[in-house]
Structures are given as structure tokens and as C-alpha cells.
Length: 327
Ligand code: NAD
Image (cartoon, rainbow, N blue to C red; front, side):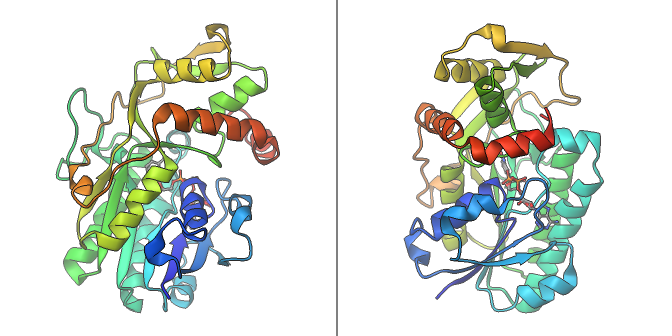
């Protein structure tokens, strides 16, 4: 039996991983015994794990809490860290929590894994640590040049995790991925924000000239990549998980309007995000050499996501009502 600790497992991507793991999505770990540790911030929600309720152990807690980790981490064969403050706009408004969880939290967790002798650790990270690139794609040894407090804090956590490998030999691998979409994504992020605003008869706020480019990936493909790194990645190495659709925000908005049969009169131009990165792009040749290939075509994934939000108002309406029109 493989005993797996998933930190941040009640968030968007972590919960996708846990649902998949507990429903046979990763055959190598079909016998997994799963613990989810999550602080349940505004972004954490046990409803995200409702489809697998009763099939995992839950610890309500903080990855910055060394005492809690000293109790929970020992005995696990694998620790995967999805826990983070993840929304760039919130990091612009207030950065303290981002540094606390994304840097200190990672250090506290790595130390707990080292103390417990955990044989396999995966730290989940983002393409945003590289900053912005006009043309071409980053490979794993590109220099880090983060621009937002979110990405700077993630870069700090990445450096700490790698330092635990280089200094102490902690068997940790890192993954860095592009922009995710899919079901159960908190409706502050652009795809669920736009989709749910449109479903409510409202407008969508489009930043600046709409020319910012993101490389979109379905959370199912991201999690498949993380699983491959957990099973076959080398300690101390970074692996990219690239998207399947490079789109400007204008193009993305057009796809969402088309999916819902609506027009551009629903789009409201708003001032650009401060320090807005223009383009992210990852090369994923290293992970593909391990056998990775994305499986969800963007148009299919987007249509399925829109259908999910249409069918699951009960999940997102309470979140939108508490969050107002955050984006
Ligand atoms: P999310 O905000 O939906 O979920 C984060 C989860 O972490 C929540 O359940 C929250 O309660 C939990 N959490 C936050 N602080 C915590 C703490 N101190 N202790 C314990 N739990 C805590 O984020 P997400 O979109 O699912 O992202 C998961 C990971 O993937 C993050 O590390 C993020 O940086 C990375 N990532 C996300 C994307 C994306 O597009 N969403 C892209 C690349 C990488």
C-alpha cells in the first residue's frame, strides 16, 4: 500500500488529483491510502472532494505549522504539495499571506519531510516564476525572473525545496505548469469568473488590450504530469508541464462567448493588471521523454468545463456571493 499525503488537496488542482487518485486514475497507486491536509482558506473547499467522501483521511491544518506536520507527515511514502496562495490579483492587493504559505510553508513542509525520512516529495509550481517571454519557450534551466508577489513567493518556495535536495538530499522533484482550467476552479480565476458572470447575465472584465498570452492546460493533464513526475521523476529535478492552447485573453474571451452563444456586448474593458506578464511559454520536452502527453484538447475541455459550471450552480453560487466580483 502507498501512503500519500496531499497538502492543499481541497483546492482546485489538489482536489482533482485526489479524486483521480481515489477513482483508479493512476494505476500504479491504485492501492493508495490518502491523507489530505488543508487549511481550508477561502480557496479550499471540502465540497471539491465530495465525490470521494469517506475515502480519505482529512487533517485541517496549515503547512506552516511544524508541530502539526511532525504528527501528520511520518508514515507517508509520498508527499505532494499543492498548498499555496494562488491568485495573482490577491497578491497585488496584499502579499503577506503569499510569502507565508508559498515560502515559509514550503520550508516547514520540506523540513518535516526530511525529519520523517519521506522517500518521495513533489513540489507543485508554476511557469510564472520565469517572468514573461515575448517569443520562444523556457526550458527547465531558464533563469527565474518573477514579477508578481505571487510568482516571486512561488520562486522562493521552489528555491527552498531545491536547497533541501542539494543540502540534505531530500528526494524532492518540482513541477512547473501553465494556466489550468477545469471543474471546481474557484470563480475568481478568469475562465470560471467569465463563464459564471455570463451565465448570470452579467459582463466580463477584460484586462488592458486583451493581448496577454497564456498557455492553457486542463487540470486532468496537469495532474497526469504530476503523477508521472512522482512515479518516475528524478530527485532535485524540475519538470515542465506545458499547456495545449496558447491563446490571447481576447481569443479566450471569444471562445467563452461562442460556447455560451453570446456576443462582445458582454465584454467590459478594464485597466490592465499591474505588472501584467505578457506571455508565458514552457517547453515540456523533458517530461515528454518520460512518456508524458496531454490528452484533453482545449475546445473539448473548455466545452466540458462550461457544461460543468452550468450544471453546478450549487457549488459556485455561494462562493461568488461571498467573493463579490473578485478577479
Ligand atoms: P487553489 O487556490 O485552488 O488551492 C490552494 C489550496 O491550498 C486550498 O485548498 C487552500 O485551502 C490550501 N492552502 C492555502 N494555504 C494553505 C496553508 N498555509 N496550509 C495548508 N493549506 C493551504 O490553488 P490551485 O489553483 O489548486 O493551485 C494548486 C497549486 O498549483 C499551487 O501551488 C499553484 O501555485 C500551482 N499552480 C496553479 C496553476 C493554476 O492555473 N491554477 C498553474 C500552475 C501551478
